[in-house]
Amino acid sequence: MKTLALFCLLVLVSPFSLADDKPVEAVKYVDLQRYAGTWYEIARFPFTQQNGCHNTTATYTLNDDGTVKVTNRCRKGGFDGPESVAVAKAKVADPVSQAKLKVKFFFLAPWADYWVIRLGDDYEYAVVSQPSRKYLWILSRTPQMEATRYDEIVKGLQEDGFNMTRLEKTPQKWEGL
Image (cartoon, rainbow, N blue to C red; front, side, top):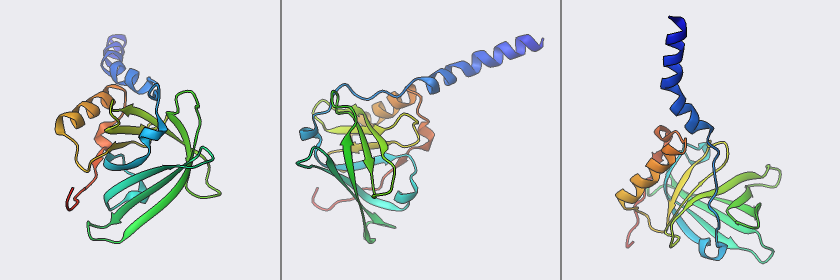
């Protein structure tokens, strides 16, 4: 009887375990010229430095030396809150795909993985994570994302083993956009 119970438990749990064991994959190629510019954060996994952030953006600027300047901005505590700015440097970790980068926010910090794991055909949206799945950002070229697109992205990420119950939508409200 114990063997049957254990078998049933394994059958019930295994689909979820398999999804978690599936490795995170970056997209095949990112044209960094097209990727450069401003992205609006639509949703993210909780990240201490972003607690209370509204109107969060990330701007990528290509440097002459092949690195990328990353400027993250948000309003802390509300849409009229003080602006918080964090500047980082990124370098391409995979020159073939350019989809895997390493990023660091201050001199002594270690380089962290920054992988583009989803990318719209017209670079209208992107999803960024890393192999551990600890962090996740859904980005868009506009402050709002069409609900069906958002739902498709979330569903695909869940199928790829991401714990989407952790996902938090980012408050975005922009005048004139």
